[in-house]
View (cartoon, rainbow, N blue to C red):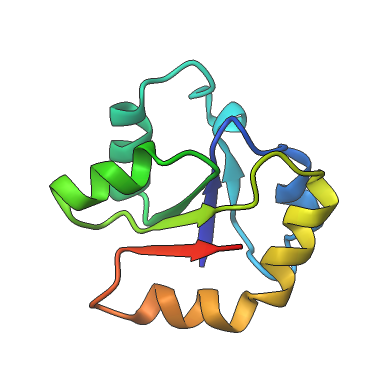
Length: 110
């Protein structure tokens, strides 16, 4: 599973989570740090990424347009990157199942 980290999440997680989520990227690595949500959405859809964000915008978009791409919504509020890393590791089985589930377009993690 490939994750695409939104600009509100640290780029450091790409490297730190590589063994769990290989081939993941941060929007800054692919020159989308200043892109609109629509541009990020289209990139993720065309390239089979799950968007990881802390904002509700992508969830709202998925309610209107469906999926792909799927959305992994981190609902912790402002928190340290280490906390997000731990959440993504602890929830790896659920996230893997989410990717394969054809019924769910957004997974919220608290």
